[in-house]
Image (cartoon, rainbow, N blue to C red):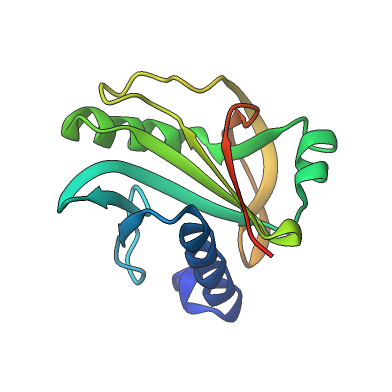
Length: 156
């Protein structure tokens, strides 16, 4: 089974992720794109890692996120737990970055503090969602992250 990032849709997602990071304006380093990783990267400042992050893009607007999706971002709960473990091990926050393609808007939220404790409001539920950027469906335990307190970075 090939990695989704190696497909045309995967490359679009990578470019959208990089656009979100550009909007946020923090220095970052990505995990390798051609391997499976528990997180997508790290924010750095003065040559030190200050946070780890997971990033996703959605073909939605801010209005859609707030109304149709109840201002919640879905991330697999397993991904949240793996990010929290890295957060705890490295004593840095685990953050979520959500890029809303329709508005060219990036959202940044702290999911854990530097001890790995959850700080974002999250509800957990088993649901069916799109499996990957290339489609398909998956039934899995998902975290619904309340984006109400996320910081917004607006593009064009």
